[in-house]
Amino acid sequence: MKSPGILRTLRKHMWGYLFIVPAAVIFILFLWMPIIKGFVYSFYDVDFVQGNEFVGLDNYKTVFQDSEVPVAIRNALYYMMLGLVLGYWVPIVFAIAISELRKFQGFVRVAAYLPNVIPVVVLYGLWRWFYDPVGPINAVITGTGGESVSFMTDPSWSMLSLVIMETWQQFGSAMLLYLAAVLSIPRDWYEAAEMDGAGVWARIRYITLPSIKNLALLMLLLQLIGTSQGFQSQLAMLDGGPVNATLTYALLIVKYATTRLELGVASAMGVLMFLVLSVLAVLQFRLSNRRES
Image 1 (spheres, rainbow, N blue to C red):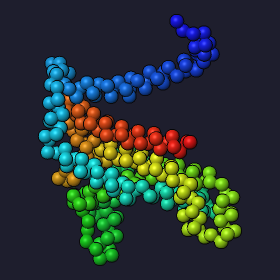
Image 2 (cartoon, rainbow, N blue to C red; image 1 turned 30 degrees about the horizontal axis):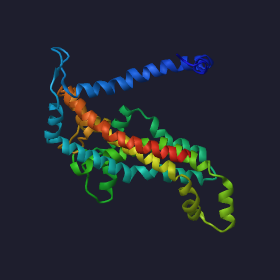
Image 3 (spheres, one colour; image 1 turned 45 degrees about the vertical axis):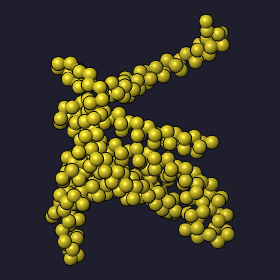
Image 4 (cartoon, helix red, strand yellow; image 1 turned 60 degrees about the vertical axis):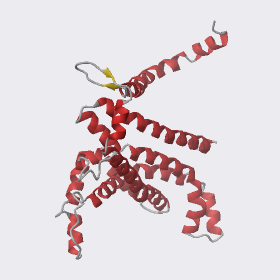
């Protein structure tokens, strides 16, 4: 039997719970149900026409025996590494630089964010033209005496080219978060540092960077999780080529599900990816709690 205290609390907050119900239903139906079904389907040979057949761990054996899986994992790790080396520090630098501006700060802030609102269809067409053998980038290279670069067809350049494109488009949203964190630092700290003779670099090193350290760690984990799931640009621009140079783990899952129609194997790969990303999510949660405390 429920205690009167619980019933009183339920009556008091009834309307709040009712407003939460639609969001909770959508969350369960479109997030947790697919996750649960993914776990279930990973043990089945999925056939929506003749019915599913239980195959045990055969799908997982297929994943571990597929010669493309190690290639996809290596490409995914390479993609994550390039994202960190080329893209992780860009929003931090832009946020700090914009915060130091005395004029036109609003204009620069909007200009830096504009690439983020470009539709992906336009984005891919634009950068295909940039990377074309007779496009503007190669025109500059050949005009200065260099040799034309095959950005899209050379395996050593293809993944790097995609990361440069995505960094240009996506750094604006992260930059706004860093900028908000930088602008929330008490200005008294900077004024006191200036009175003590500290220059710009000293203020950045001893005030700005330590103040945004926790946010930078959280953004690092979010970027690792996001890039580990990357497949859209690899699929749209190169379909995993050339010679599987941009075939990431997430893209291989998509190929198993949509091209090879082996949904059980795709589910098994998704489960393995879910387990790995769960570890990163736990780390992010702990860092978030530490930041709040």
